[in-house]
Length: 242
Image (cartoon, rainbow, N blue to C red; front, side):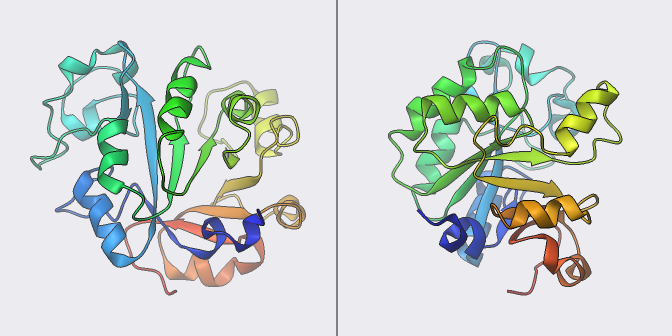
């Protein structure tokens, strides 16, 4: 497959769905709005302490539900009835999400960083083997990307990255990750790079080898000014020109 000719390059991607004040991020209504507007969807997968895959971005439940706790250390039964923001919508399970989308638009699935790489990833693989729609997988953790390359090589996978200025990881890890040292090791087929850090000669070189997706774009000027650095965008909080 020529990834440069695929949806991953050709179809703009709505960050956590086409969310707004009515439809919260990573909610089924935000996903429906993205579908109706003709966008692909970026979303996040986490695993609860009892092994349930759920669609949720933060580790901490507080921002989106008002409840304290780490979703990775919480049983599904304790979060299944929580509302997302001020809405009546709940945290979707991965199964509910895939059944809802049902192949109607392509998916860019971010697997959140976590301990014990392989447990959640194998569950994701097993579920996606039964899914008929188009999708690609990405993660900040290069070992998660590597797991997919080794255990589901037919799945398109890519490396998420940034400059990691606000992260508390050791300096050498930041250097390795921001400079994409792992993309050959984990057989990445595309790179997703932070719009705030993308203006680098490295990204131009990478772009000649594989598609570069720019995240998260929040204004049209970023699209217009940074064209030489990206092949596609992940956007939110505005409607980009197509």
